[in-house]
Length: 311
Image (cartoon, rainbow, N blue to C red; front, top):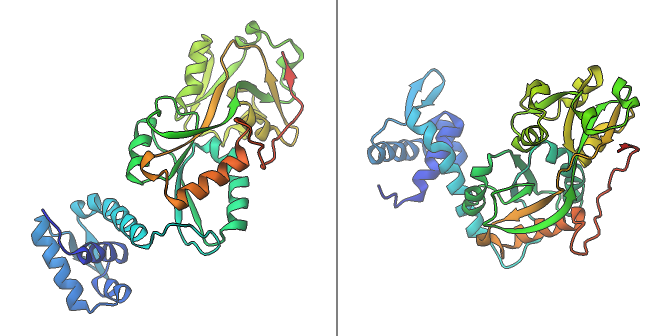
């Protein structure tokens, strides 16, 4: 199939979003017959009804649902290309940046990033997405996302800037009975643990330490951990900055036992294809200025330092 008229994509997107031919016509500034004619052409081209009449408008078919995200993304890329210039003025830009971050990455990076973006580029929007490792490279190369933050083993065919080194620590409640003891390897084996399914690295750490039999709770996200740890004797192994962020307020304890695990590096990734894109370059330079602790960078974002129990 060859779509010669990009207006057909705009018509499809508008009808899909509005669930109404007449409302889509208003949004597009076209007549209702023109929009209806465009939908008819699309039906013939794609061999599918695309939209069926329902009370109050139309409903998409399964084929339309399958096409919707791709069409909207294609229109977004075309619009950005048509309006691209050799420079990026953050004070006037109305761009939406899409970034891969895990939920713990959001807790570490988003507060300072959004504060800085809001001051420098008040009309810029940020969307965060949590992708599987295997999806990140393609999403960067196709422009589905602009940047990816994190420790991303296997995502290596990208441009990247190493931001900071991290290590794993143990987070417990502040009055956990085992905190009175020295945090040895034997001490680790006496704790019961939470594992976060979406973060395979933390699960791998427990297996590396032969602690998988001590897992008592498996959950999908990190951000509920503080409330669970605060009310139970369960512990969780997390990156140190995340643990310190969770522990602000004094009800949680951060323990740094010797686990014989190597430090790991959190990096900022972007695609070779968008290396010279002015907007992409502006956002990543801002992120490096905020968070980069390696290669001579001095981070502008605050680093949380809280008392912890060392081995």
